[in-house]
Length: 275
Length: 168
Image (cartoon, rainbow over the protein chains, first blue to last red):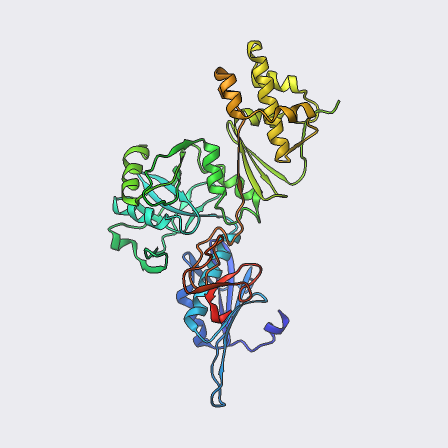
């Protein structure tokens, strides 16, 4: 880290995101502005010099000698995250790493990898692994009138309520490739603004041609489903468990593979979300 | 004679209304103990006998044999998961009775059937979207989207990262 500190830094800024203090410094002022669009939801600039996590960005480019181009390099602490000529690649790495760092270390919020919508004052949380169809089901629920909270993280407060993390929906193409980032307004929906209690946990994975016949689980099964996708569970198990165990006091849990999202979304709202 | 005793260290226990959630820091597994198993687990303090546990599980003397078998099944399961030690051998043998057999034999006492549901606690990388370029590699046979390769050299820590393979 001392070697990185010794380099010449033209400037930097610090901020807070879900309570995590993050600092970013760069070798040129121009480089700092290039990282700004990649800052995560909930970012707030601060003036404090003390941070929990520090990113260092060295912007490359052509050198005075002909034919030589310096790499752009990104560090998180002392660990090198990227060394590339492609600035888009570097900002993507920065965006992903910072979002994950916030999800793992946020001191007052527990992040669970899940899609979330709200319906009649309660949250429907859909935890799942990548490629399980969370964003598709979230989008289908939003099209039916549910309020959009997130397609990536259910963010739980210390009281076990879900807070919005309404980034644009990241939909994949049919072959699993990354597709466009879709603003929720283009689906006819709107993002949520306030925290809500959980009404329903839906644990489901897309399986082609499958008919959704969910089994109703206990409160413990619902919390277990949330914990199986909780980002900080290995690092802070006691803390994460105590938050998530407050998340489902009156809600319940459904589990089962599903087919097409539109039909499932309609059944969830008409049959199961009847609070 | 030593009585069943739950493990003291590396366990995080959260009591719910009827169930218990247990996080095992050694195996990074989370277990959800159902009502019957939770009663047994709570009384694995090294002092409570198995017959006493059976009585607590089901105070009705007519169902004492069912309750005893349920305690045996629960203890065998808890022992298998390394949550409880000092389990008598005869109970471990009893654990070979399946829950299905138990339910068939004692249909009326089906509420006593011990059940433990377990999941692996995810690493940070597992609990995030994966597979796109510059994102963390997914687990399984196809860790990255097509045209990309999973490269552990370009990423911090042990997380592999999906990159265009010539960049790795």
